[in-house]
Image (cartoon, rainbow, N blue to C red; front, top):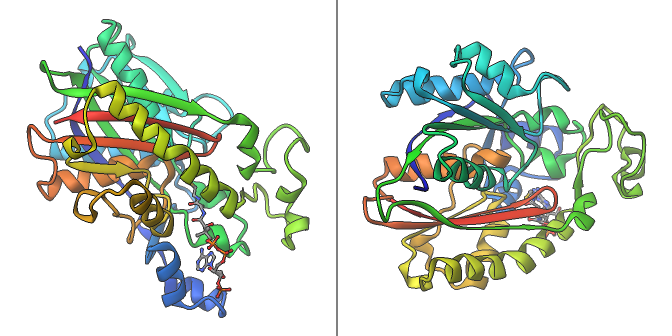
Length: 334
Ligand SMILES: CC(C)(COP(=O)(O)OP(=O)(O)OC[C@H]1O[C@@H](n2cnc3c(N)ncnc32)[C@H](O)[C@@H]1OP(=O)(O)O)[C@@H](O)C(=O)NCCC(=O)NCCS
C-alpha cells in the first residue's frame, strides 16, 4: 500500500526579514520591485542559536498539536536537509534523540533541496509499500539563511528558513501517493551551489567564487545562476508533468490542485502559463515565507488543506525542482 499524508505540521522561525528591511540595505531595489519580481514580501530567518534540528523538532511539535500522533509508533524518520547542524551525526539522529523516538526506528538524512519533499515522499511510500515501515515521519528542515552572503541581494530576497513534518501512513485503496517520477541533471549542478564551508577547495564553476561576484567571502556564499535555473526549470518541468500524468493514466483536467515547488512567483507564473493550468487550480503561496527549499510544497499543502482546497476525493499533482539539478513529481489522491 502506498503512503497517505495523514497530517502536516509547519514550524517557522520567529524572526522575519521584510522587503522594507532589504530595501533599506539595497536602496536601488524598492519594496515594490522585490515583491513584483519574486512575489515575496517576507521570509523567516533562524535565530543565531536555532539550527535545522531545532526547526525540525518544532515542526514535529506543531504536527502533534494539530494531530493525535503517537511518536512511539513511528518506525522510520526521514529528514530532508542541506543545512545539517554538524557534518555528523545526521540531523535525523539528533531529531530522533530529541523526540525520544523508539530505538527500532530507522533514521536517514536526504541531502536534497527543492525536489526533496517529493523524493522523500517517494522513498517513504516505497518503505510502506514494501512492508519495511508502517508509520513514517518525513521532515523537511533548512536554514539557508546561513548559506547566503549578506551582500548578495539576488538570493537574500528569495530564500527563507523553515521546517515541516508530515505523518505518512499506509493509504486506503485508491488513495495516497502514486505515479512518482524522478530526474537529475548533475552536469548542471553548478547553477545552484555553495562554494564555501565544505571539505573541498574548488571544483565548482569559477563564477561561483564570491570574489568574481564582487562579494567579500563570508563563509558558504551560495551561488545561484538565476537565468540558468530558470531555463532548466522551464525545460524539464513540462515533460516531467507529462511523465507523471502518463504514469497515473490521467488527463490534465483530472488534476484539481497543482502544487509545485514555490521557487518564486515570477518563475511559477511562467510555468503555469507554459503548462496552460488555470490560475484557480495552481497554488502560489510564498508571499510571507519565501522559498523555503524542501519545505515549500508541504507548507503549501498544509495551508491548502486548511483552506479546504484538498477535499477528500480530490487529486493533486506535486512537482519539486532545483538544486542538483534534480526534480521529482507525484500524484496525491486525497
Ligand atoms: C532570479 C530571477 C527572478 C531573476 O529574473 P530575471 O528576469 O532573469 O532577472 P534579470 O537579472 O534579467 O533582471 C531583470 C530585472 O529584475 C530585477 N531583479 C532580478 N532579481 C530580482 C530580485 N530577486 N528582486 C527584485 N528584482 C530583481 C533586476 O534588477 C532587473 O531589473 P531592471 O530591469 O530594473 O534592471 C529569475 O532568473 C528566476 O526566477 N530564476 C530562477 C531562480 C530560482 O527560482 N531559484 C530558486 C531555486 S529553485
